[in-house]
Image 1 (tube, rainbow, N blue to C red):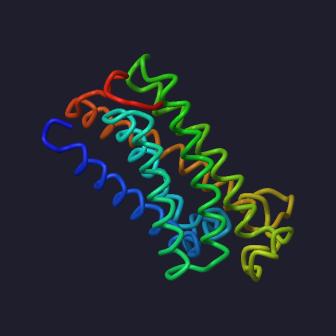
Image 2 (tube, helix red, strand yellow):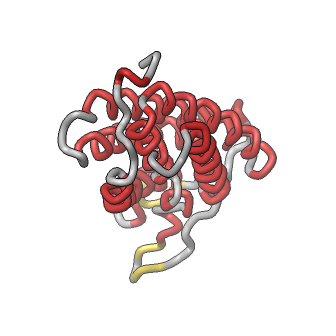
Length: 216
């Protein structure tokens, strides 16, 4: 970045990544208790869905400015900080689920973004966020709430309670399944909206050049 040293940009990336993940880990424990007509959003969404997609924005900006090696370091250090803080502020099971999903999804995001970075400015962040969000959602909600993974910690009674799919369909499923689908939908919406600040910020950074990185 022209106004920031590589070290400062790297530290800001780590801090932003850790802040987004910790906030999301806390907020995912709180359903959106709001009714829209006959639809109860508590059956569909948690507040964590609105903050977590910003992790992909942080990741992609780091990748754009400093390259994939730096982005992986931000992911790994941010992952470690987030897990430690999440154990203290959320719960051990949420921390394990979040850490596993975060690590897999963000490293996948780095790889996809790097392969597509030479194309249109929006293609790399859009597709990497889409695939990364899908993987993150499946891994996180399964580990955090599915009865099959209760070895990781006690089950959330409200999350595993049967409820209409997405709050409207006759098929009843554990509430966390609808949370996962709703979460993924919001992630896609937020990721799309994040392309606006991404498009602005990408004009302010000095794009990474392969010759500047020792490793990919």
